[in-house]
Length: 462
Image (tube, rainbow, N blue to C red; front, side, top):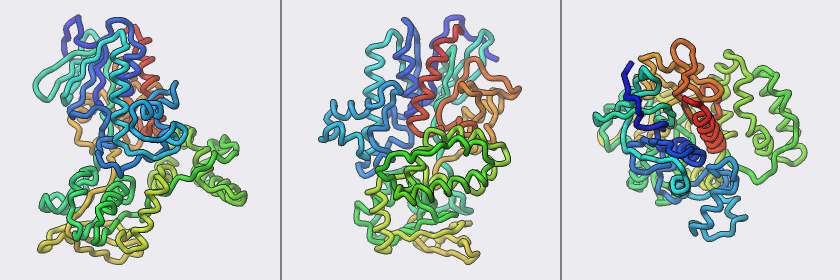
């Protein structure tokens, strides 16, 4: 335990300057009493970006219409208002609200709203370009933050908003491949520079695969693109429909298997009335956390083993136009989807050979020029390779969340320590709460958590 100065450097330190961290800072500044000192710590240059919104590629679109992307719970049309005021899109507001726009607009929007909150606040904001590698509890309360560059600062309250961690390729030998033979799907500019004649293997068939495939299509990629995943499922499209009217409350009382059977019956009833399945998912959308929390531990584990990928492709949908382009690539033979589990990768002349087993138990062997990692985000906190999180776990200031996913927290976002006690001065927001909430990644959940955490921090006399 560290002895911190009586006069702390900052009242609140927000660690992480992606979407969750910036929205938390906005809420703190909007509510700040005179003299509140807020620090926002983010090692990368672009605030509001994180992994999801760092792309500069115009073909990488939001996965929901602009009208649902406000950062402010009390102003649902705020993102559209920003777009109109900044002339970012040459469309009227009512049309913009239903459009799937380039994701790069959202990071710029967050920075604009942070600047506005700062200009109108009674508090003070300091933005520090720094990695936080450790938190030390202070004897008088609060924490000492140890920065990678050797500096430190003290804060009375800390909010962890460190965002998503990328999952490494789960293939033996992948880390030994030449650097020019493997790349991350999130390295969007590197993907855009791939030779048009290079045969590719994309490991993973989720949203990051979609970004890579759409970029390749836009650059007239001519060689086959092999997509390999265990389930062989790709994200499905949105549909312009209102939520299907039914009472979802009985679902919450069911175990996982009867719940899935009941959900299939509801979808069949909707389709019998000419209503697509997407309308049922729209009705369930606000209940994601309740659906997860109403399952016992055994059923949550069954969900993670057997259901999660099917849920994801129906829940995390994409722009219908993007989906149509992917299907066109498949019809043309340019995008080839394989349902298989890859085991290993190794150099073979000028190529990379990847090998595994398909769903029928047969050997799948592909020789490609490039291997792309699109396996998505890491949910197991002990595998995230984040020095700060490892230090918090090692010192007992935090413990893994249920099923080893994220870190554990109470209903208000206070971090649970190794003795099972919620911390009075350490909160968490966003993807690290996924083990408790499951739905803790999308903007509707993040903006609500940001407002709740800010209100809790400013109501606490500590």
